[in-house]
Length: 437
Ligand code: FRU
Image 1: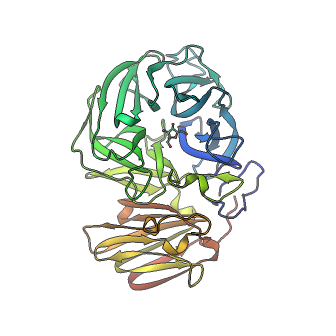
Image 2: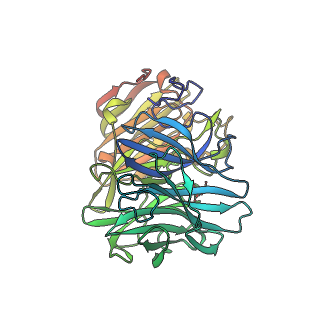
Image 3: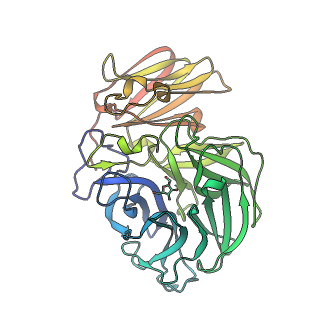
């Protein structure tokens, strides 16, 4: 259901049909996720001219329903000296910056400026007075500069009558918090970390309230659940100055390989926390064999908190191809043929997803153990919901308490589904159909 600017669905090999992909060239992290005047804005790390990482700029797409996206021209381009790294966007309703007016408030992007000689990363502003279509750089940039080479990915929000920035100190495995009255002058509040998983750089943080708790998302690369990139989260309290974790046990957002650098939308109409991640892994992102584009986003997922666990529910799930079943011990096989299939099920109280036979080692060799994931659960029966697109599979088990996101080399239009063991209520909806608007 991704609509390209040409009006036609991309039909290249492994081109997802209901996940956002840029029409051409490289994409990584989602940036500047925000809802404004009826549109969801998805900015993204983009190389506008090549199908590999580089020339980092903010690409842009908009959607009214989070399912059909329209790609727009590059919003914030790189220069010869600097890349425009990850960040967020806000609407300055009170005109605290003076960039707009109260009647026509500015959309302000807060991004990391990365010097190409790797000497420095600092936080900068660019603003738009035309709903994100064109941006002007703030002449007083940078607005937050620690003279550090690793300092990036600001997530800014309006909380308790001031701007709050949550930003990563990647090699220190810390998240820093700053406050500001006007997005231009920033006061340091506190740092959180190192804690739990520190096997790689901490990047792309997000902080938000769910029920009476606060959740801090932290992506890290490498050192993920299985291999390479992964996202962990902490649950605790935000007291206006510090994030105080309830505990520092490891909690993974996703047990698959391919969900990284995800954050939530600012300003959703009903306050829902809607998450999008980059559906890839730095371990092999550069060589995933798609062209003329490389990179896709996960499906949008609404996050809620149940006890001490984030629960993920796909937004618009009823409209897209999916497979559902319950099992008390058994598995399903989604097969292209006898040799090529994905197996998903429950065995020895572990949910598993085996994509060993759904990969092309010829196209992209990776160790076999990366292709099987399993996780122990505390119930004897589990319900699974699976979204399979060209080149990817997303499994949500036990009502979304366990998510597994994986790139594959399977085309769902060619598949059939069979089962063994205790599999109940197996339903396949819209599988193999061509999706048109
Ligand atoms: C995460 C990341 C960010 C950085 C961006 C650069 O994938 O490394 O930390 O801002 O990608 O493209």
